[in-house]
Amino acid sequence: KYLEGFPKIYAWQEPDKGGQTFIGKLAKDLPNLLVISAPPGAKDPSALYLSDPQVFKSKFPQLLKTARPASEVLKEGEDRVWQGNWELAKPLLEDPLILVKVVQAVESQFVIGERRNVALLFLAIVSRCQSRPLNVEVFGPSTGGKSHITNAVVAIHAPEAVYTLTSGSERSFVFSEDDFSHKFIYFQEAKGVHSGDVAQAIIHELAWGNCLRYGFVDKTAQGLKHRLIEKRGPTGLIL
Image (cartoon, rainbow, N blue to C red; front, side):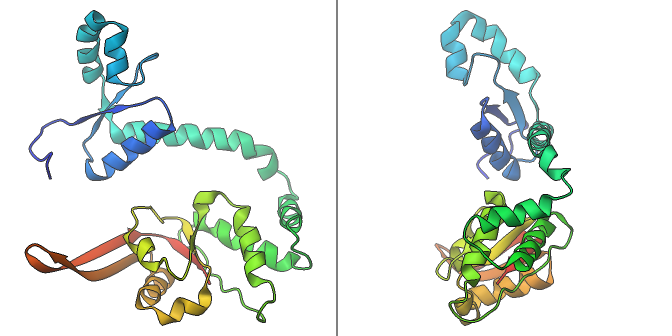
């Protein structure tokens, strides 16, 4: 709200992963944000000025003129990451025995005799890329190794693919600023899931819809106010 009324808002993007993340967070609240890409040898405006104060006077206005919409810059960054990941993963993705190798990798973590369950759970988590991910319930006898199997399969996926939720972190999940679209939520302590109102709300919303809506009462200087938090999906569940 402090930037309302400004016709143009610029942000300097540093030439590293942190710079991309910074612009992504700003763009969520500033859809018309313009991005200044750091020129070679200048991580930030201070470095550009210190390199040559006289050149800075003519260079910086040019950088303002060539600033691009944040949406365009973020899309280019995502494309570069995707292309790099594709080149790295291409030999494995084109291997007809990829699922066999996945199972073997999980078995190396001392998961024995569970090949079918390992393969099913791995494919279920891959479904996060679809418009409606699968929901999974892992069940079996107590101390039968359910958590060990699930943790081993989760560990083989990218860290951002699965958000592990412990019994004491339901509210931290709801109030976090993380994006949970096309991810899985893993309830590590499933026994406590049905005992908390927050956890029940999460399960109901995510299992039957593509958006989590959680309402609560917030105490403000103007009194009690109703707030609504929304987290866009689709999101899958592991119980």
